[in-house]
Image 1 (spheres, helix red, strand yellow):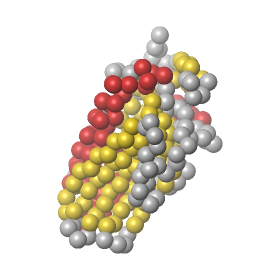
Image 2 (tube, rainbow, N blue to C red):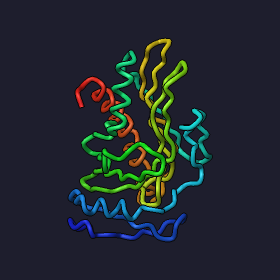
Image 3 (tube, rainbow, N blue to C red):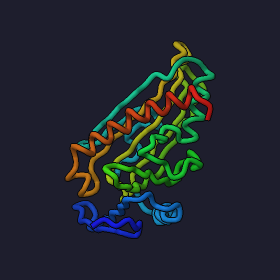
Image 4 (cartoon, rainbow, N blue to C red):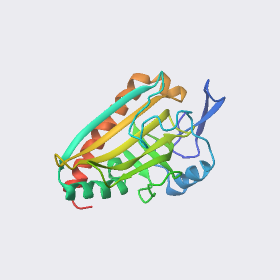
Length: 221
């Protein structure tokens, strides 16, 4: 039975790892609880072997077999100034300011090895998910300028896989685009049992993230 206390923990068996802790709360967890969660992730391994499969480093995604592949792209506008604003928005993790999704914390630097928590609120329940940045992109020359990063899941995440976030500026056309490429499969038993709903939540995240980035580049920070 769920308690409002963030200390409530249920453990559910998983075929991949013997026991995965599932931490749920009706109320938003305190910052102290979130920081304790982040501290617990230090040194923990990624939950998947195919690091780099989203192609953040070389631009060539290599989705592993039996993973869902999701690719979403939105044109944000035109010009160098808008691309610069998009880069700054991504540095602030603006693409996670969705109301029902919260990045803990937006001052986390975009550097490989940095661990963050994604706090998701669905069906009235808060759930923390752990991710670690596995690669970054900062290409300032060439016909297409690119900036972004990819993060991968840790075991305390409902899904298993990697997600890449990029902003791109085509200097020939002037077009600036925001691009998300993700590979995933359920990691936790609840994610498997609620697979159709989990996929809808993933789609909702992509759509809302596109809207958040559009807003970020047209509004002051």
